[in-house]
Image (tube, rainbow, N blue to C red; front, side):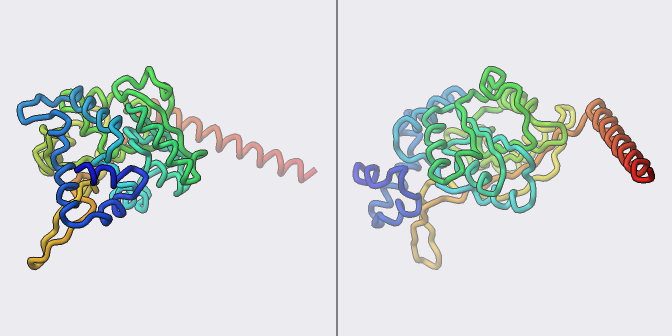
Length: 302
């Protein structure tokens, strides 16, 4: 185990890290991650709420070891969402981690602001953005998702918010608090693109699978709460947890595990007052344009 930990550091890719092991080493490497909750002191008897979840996640960041969700590349579900045109304008990456999703979007031409409650994660995100040559298009801040009004992001507005496995870090009792913190930051008509992992783990003990999560999200993002769900589909979320694949009796080791995931797109409809302002502004702009055209024609006639 000591050998595998020292052989696999954050500077290497997950694939290079995994391929450098023989099968025996890979077995221990896989078991290290499959049992990371035990290593952090989480047991079946532990009461895992958002506070204990945050505590153990911070311990993982501070340990300097591999992080289960750090695959060192954008999530395939995010790449698909970008190809479908789901991202508009200035993007907020909530719970950005090491910043790979934000860096991907910056390379695609978006301006991205990311925040995470781990200072270690934010510093690594800044370093990765600099090495990727997009530090001017990415901003990263340390912030508490439950107190964004007291953070450097207070008062800022975004056309799109990305949540890649951030909501799931909060237990159901706290998720509304989190949503109420990010909702005011989304402009009217803006979209939330959410990726939530749907398998059960010690840090997601409240999850009951894909179908359960569908119903849960429908309740969280209902019309009464000011949301309109536009799209929800099944996809996968890559986790930095090696797995054994058996095909026709032949075993092979994969460097990452594709976990079941839901991708949801929800929008904040433009409210009537906001719509009135938009309509009035459009009418005034058209009137101004018409008046300018009339004045030019009169000037030309003279």
